[in-house]
Image (tube, rainbow, N blue to C red):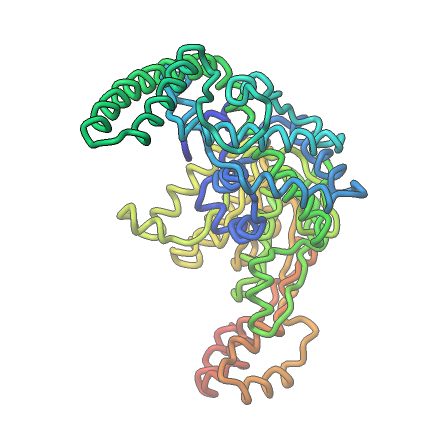
Length: 492
């Protein structure tokens, strides 16, 4: 995160989201497809953050809804995109100018173009009530310094009438250049060239004085221009959010005491499923404070639910539409998704030891505004101890104010939780049909994945866990005598 963005995030009441969570949840996939036009909008996406202020979040959602609902939204977006895509990041020059350094001619040119584009964006923005709520300082004072003639031309030079001295110097320079052109011999030309060199020196000195004067005049206006950069990025991202709402199967979530998502999807995972010939099953879930448990076969469905929940909660708290039929949730200031053990190896820890450290850190941080998602905790130890650890963890989290969801394949965990869900899995599928497809396929796992229903259904704590692992072993053709041994262990 750049210093500029870090300062803006802190001042605007936003909470940065860790890059690893952006990647693991599938959020990066969504952000990569939003295509902001300006460098400021791109920076906002690259440093994704969620709202710390609930009222500011409500205002953001309202602006997105109103903007997307505008009759002329697409026309307005297309008209704004033209100047937005031409903006350049001038904050380096603004920072130098604010420190009292003199700007170069090239920097003043870029600044002038920026301000002309800013003026155009302000004009277009004025037609939409939602966008008018974003404060965008009037660049009139800056233009009076950079474009005193008021021509609005996208070029910059210090004009002759910038000062009486410069006007006289350039007049004398033109006269001498005429004499050089009319000179009869080389000696005479050389004499006039020497005069011109002296005049050019005076011209450069006067231009430097004027550049210092202009830079000094701009120094007090740099704060407004820097704030304009942030506001322009906000306008850019608002257009992308409104575009999401208008062109994709998304909704603006409502505020509620519980977390509710109906028919939620994860676009990245949905695309992967469709590429393999399947179709993504939307996920519906309701969470109250405390712990909820998701159980099911180890075929990826539980992880899909957790990632979908993380993704859409982050989008909701960032003021973006969410991928669901409808959604409601309270203000969440922290989302944690714990899965995998790659980072354990980087820290020189065993898989289980590293997991314990991460769980401890997460539980310590989990407060009323936290959504804590744990994917197969205690999977790196023996099953009896692992099941006991998970039961204790769920019992503890169920008494906390955080929203916690634990995905596990361990038995007898459900009674410890406030809510329970199961992956639908292979329920209702014809095993013989699946087996026939596997026999004619190069990948039995892919065939099973196509038939696996990763949707969730609520269940009671007493409901016995489905024994789909045994069915999957049969479908994938484990040897007959090996299956007999396995089935005997099941019966015992």
